[in-house]
Each structure stands twice: as C-alpha cells, then as structure tokens.
Image (tube, rainbow over all chains, first blue to last red; front, side):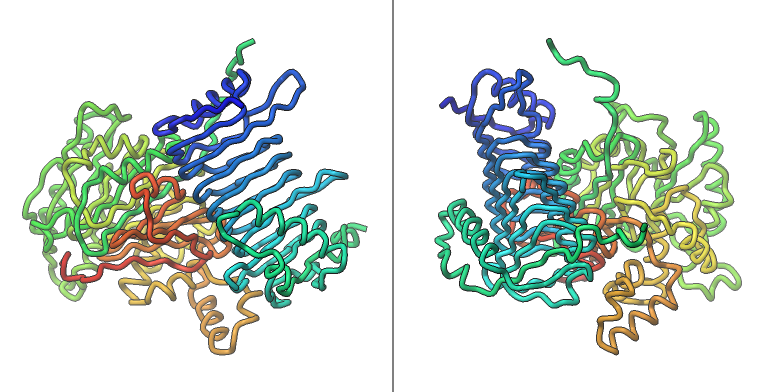
Length: 252
Length: 374
C-alpha cells in the first residue's frame, strides 16, 4: 500500500485538496497529513470520474478546518486532535474518527457512513441527519453535546455515551425530529427534549444496536482502555419521534 | 481533460472572522501573532474590511483620550479640508497635547485610504458642560463630529487604546498600519469582514468603538432599527452604516453609564427565550422577565458572535442559540477567542483548555491586576 506523507504547513485549502486528488488518482492509498491547520474540505474532493470508487485512509495531525469529510464518499479519516464545525456535512459513506472534540453542526445532513468523536461536540449535532433504505448514518459521541441535538433529524443513529459520568445539560433536543433514533447514556429531563419526541427505554433490538456500535467506538479508541460491559451496564434512554410526519395535520 | 474553472467556482462564499488574544498578566505583545491568526481565516472574509483594537498601546499618553480620525473625500484636498474643519472644532473643545498622522506603510496597496490622524486630548468643558463627566463629554463630542462635521469620523476615542481599520483583508490592514512593528498591547481583537448588507467603506470596518469599548462581530443584527431608535434616545447617533455599531453603543450605555455587570448585560443583549424562562425558578424568572420588559429594545436579534474589548477585559458572547461560532482557549496567562480553533493553535499549538461557550453565556478574560495598565 502506497503511503504519502504531506507537511501541510502553509498550504492552502485548495492546493492541499488538489494534491490529495492527484495523488489518489495516481494510486496512493494512504495519506499522513502533518501540521494541518484550518484547511477545509479534507476528504471531500476524493472521487474518481470513471465510475469505480477509490478508498483511501487519511491520518491527520493538527486541527483540520471546517467541513472535514463533507460529501465524503467512502474514505477513512482519523484525526489526532480536535475538529471544527460541519464535520461530515452531507457525508455519504466512510468513517471519521476524532481523538478530541468537535464543533457545531457535526454530521449535518449526513446520509451514510460512521463518525466517532472521543469527547464533546457543539450545537446542532446531527442536524437533519437522514437515512434511506440501507443507507443509515451512525454517530457515536464519547461525551455529550450542546443544545439542539438532532434538530430536524430525519434518520440515522446517534449515541451519546456520557463517559466520565458527564451530565447532559443540553436543551431543545430533537426539535423538529421526525426520523431516526438517539440513544443517551445517563439522565435527561423531559423538559430538555422537544414535545414531538418520545422518551422510552431501549428494547432488545435497540440493545443489539448499542452493543454493536459501542463495540466499534471502543475499537476506534483502543488507548482509552474502555470496557464495553461497563458502558452498556449504564442506563440508556431512547429518543424517537412520535410521528414521522409531525406537521401533516397542520396542512391537512 | 483538465478542469476548466468557471466564474461560479470563484464565487466568494464567506462569513466573518473574529479573533482575540489577551495576556491576563498585562504583558504586552505586538500585533504579529493576531495578524497571523486572522490570516489563517482568510477564506471567511472577502477583502472588504479588516480591523484591530489594541489595549495598552499608548502608555506614555495613558492619561489622555486618544482620538483616531478618518478624513474622507474624493481628493487629497478634500481630505485636508475635512481635517481643517475638524481641527477648528477640536481646538475649541479640547486641549490637544500632541497629534500626528498615524504611520502607515506605502508598500501595502489598499483601496482609497482616507487621511488618518491621531490626537491626544483632554476635555475643555465650558459652561453647563462642566456638569458632564469627562466620558459623557467625550461621547457628546464624538457624536457631534460624526453627525455634523463633513467627512470627519472619530473611530477610536479611548485612553491607552486604539482602533486601526480599513477596507482590505485584515492581515493587509495590519501591515498597512505596521501593527506588527509599531505597537504592543496586552489585548488585541481582530476582525475580517464580509459586509452583510452594506457597502464597504473605511469607517464601516470593524471594530466599532466608543471610549474604551470596542466590538468585533460575526453575524447580522436584524433588530438594528429598533436598537438604533432606542439608543438615539440616549444621545447615540448611528452614523457608520453598519449594524454592529449598535452593539458598541449598547455596551457603553449598559456597562459604563448604568454600571450593569456583563453577566446581566448578556441577558439583555441575548436573553433566554420565553420557553426557557418559563422553566426557571421564581427569582430568576422575575429577573429575566423584568430585563426583557425594561430592555426589550436592546435585545440583539439575529445571529451573532462578538468579542467586546474593554480596558482590562476581553469578553466573548454569542446569540442565545449560537448561530455563529466562537471557541475559547487558555494557555498560561493567555486567553484566546476565535471563530475557529485552528487559528488559536497556529499561534499557540499547546493549550491548557479549549471549549465552546454556550449561546448567550459570556466568557470573560480579566487582567489579574488592573493596576498594571492604569
């Protein structure tokens, strides 16, 4: 497997992404990007026009800019550090692992693939995340989020682990939610959750999903030494929309 | 086939960028770092505005008000004539201790720079004006100049601080005024601009300031009209054609004239929505309801992230549902605020803590000892 290391110091967003594209088309399968500092859209333009779907690994040290992995189609990204806003924006497929925290609108309109965030995330996490048939995005967050988690959410799976027994203080959870599911480990008051969202205990099928994706989260961060059974033992709640068409009556 | 770039590809898609750096021990540093940090967010602006506020830059004149003036006009003669008109007014109402043209570098190409002059002054109050505090007198005079004297604009009027701003990318404006070489400050705030609704001109660039308060802003104040009418009742004239101006005057009114602490001011500018107020305990509910009734016209509606600079203080605040980003960080005595974390990491790769404040909740950096700068 051919690996290329790039020192991103002083390289513009445009030049960096052009280089990744050219190298990928030349057969590079793994990129190691050092000193990334604010360059946007990493992973976005990596597509091939001849119909086959290339898959590359991108290992990032530094702080990548906003919209990391936007529209990304199938690549795997690992960031040794924090990420900014809009990570996984309309992402189609692939995986993003962040050894740190994420900013606002993480996974906005995401329609496939997986994102694992070690720490906390900002406002509007999973804003309008969606799913269709077998395309079902998964987002697992080690800590918790700020307000408007799952706003206008239309599909996909979001899991908040609340590791370190962090309290979940965010409000307006699931405002406008009409699809998908959010699992939260820990306590959330009814007043923190929007009226159109149903709060329940996870059932057998839900437990299977949690087992699978918590397992994948733990595998993504081997250094943390997490114990799956310990985590799954905790209390989880399930948030799902009461109706898939919350505004149907309004326009009937 | 190589890709052909069409016009659309180069379309400027941007936002504003804001950045602030403060040394809480009061140690001063040049503008070099903040210029580097704001340049890293180049794509957020579009070259139509950039500016800086710097605190602690005039220690040798710290007892005097430092006025920064822009004289605009279509020709050098028009600019000089605006200055003559202003000078006559200034000599009647102030004792001028010293004045000079603010140095700039001719190597930096900027578009249509005004004549930019600096005066260190003391108020000379006459008659009934003796009843005004020095600061109220300054505000009155600044408003007079900005509304009545053609082509003259006071864009900085505090003590031991100053604003530098213009049309261009912020890093270019920084080089134009040689902020990396000529000035050392314990707090710098910076702005790269995308003018939301208004034309770009030198006076319309951020920061907006009055006395020692400065504001840089990312977002749009859709309540501008209401805020403006309210502030006019208190003698503030909005003349700079940009929404952010109202925040600077609101902060002056609330914090200086009415001595309201920032924690309460944040609840006036960015109050929790009624839904949230309903859930509070009786005491808090009463406070928040009262604030919304008394100061309803100072509610800043619309998305915003701002950095407020004051003597010895740097404050970050976003609208109540954080529709614009801000990241805060610390490293030792350094306190940073930025639209993007990468810009902080660029000048301070290792940080003690980094977080995103909740919407409507101010983050405040304060000098450990105010006496170091007074």
